[in-house]
Length: 537
Image (cartoon, rainbow, N blue to C red; front, side):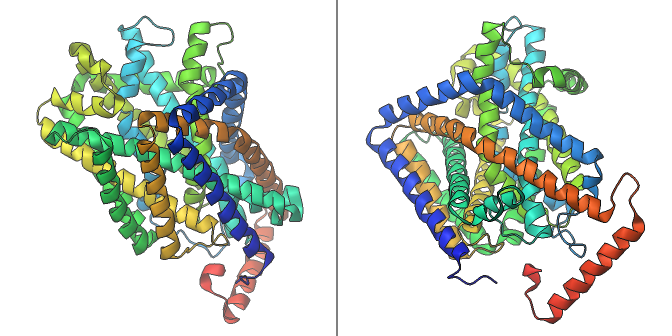
């Protein structure tokens, strides 16, 4: 165990202080003058989108294709851990935690609102046509599909590899040691870790704000609860108590059980909408949507629409925004995914991360998207409602609308708790020497801070505050993207050397592997006999 007085500890203390100061300053400025804050952040965000849209397209594609490459590479046989490490969670719990942490609230919030928006204002098709419906479903799946998980995977792979296989702490800066050397233990490492904490706080605060507005919208539809800051403050307070209780219980209990609950509730809601909605149209659309997603995958991945102003504007509003948004979320989701993936092989990790959530996304957005478009086409006033209310307005036009709305509110609340719980763990880990077991008190401190930031932003301008924070996330994604590039290069450099040492090829040298495993097991037993903590091994 590291001595608290070590340089690493001092550096981490600095990371905590600098992160708190930066976040506090932004929140105070936003609270004092939310309109000016939103305008400035929006202007910078628009500049980044306009001038770096091509860059976001390339880096997003690069990260995804890198992950796919690893599946077919001998590197894929490496374990994210020592030879004796086994997965901590069952495959089912592991997959549910991946999905819940990665896209929980968003898949409910945008389940109908994004397809509806694309249907009535498509990128290229004529509005409100069959082609517009197909384009709407295809575009939504594209935004929530493999690209997002490729970004998360690139960050998570590097973190899990260096932490569990190489014995580094769980700090993102440590993944760059093969490139930067001991500079990761100095000011350069501090900058990287502060940026990681900042991006995590920004991303999660936006998610909590979005979740709060949708819960408020559902309660408004169900019980007439007014949509205002007082109600939203009470919602945040109530949910904060719940996720702090989960955080106090620990990772294996709280997040695991909540993630499994999320999937059960989401499954019930999905089946209900499939049965109560236009069932045959949905079932026919499912293979079509999947085929269109696969068929247009490469073309859409690299299409920046340089000679089509209408499509270019649409890309700036949707695709570029999403790519930047996922980039800003990648440190939070990547750190959490890395934590729960100990003992998995690189190949197993990448295949599960790319295929399972993407398949779920295709089914989810097809069922909700087709239903939303069909209902909104018959009830045009739904199109004019805010995205936080549209889902409940659609339920209102269906049988058993009240039970559906209640279930949706519970699901959003559960996703809210899971995301916040995961975030408190990640922030606690990043500010406690990269510990895999941050103290419950530290997690509670960060939990209260996240909820406070979310409410202050709502208080300082309602949706304006959220939009300003989203703009800040887009801005933060630009410098952080360079860190991700270095992480990929660092991971590949070290993993490829490891692969060569083990003699791993498409047909590995079994004698070399046996020699390595025997050596690893002997070292493990020696450390265990010396009384070193099992977690540190």
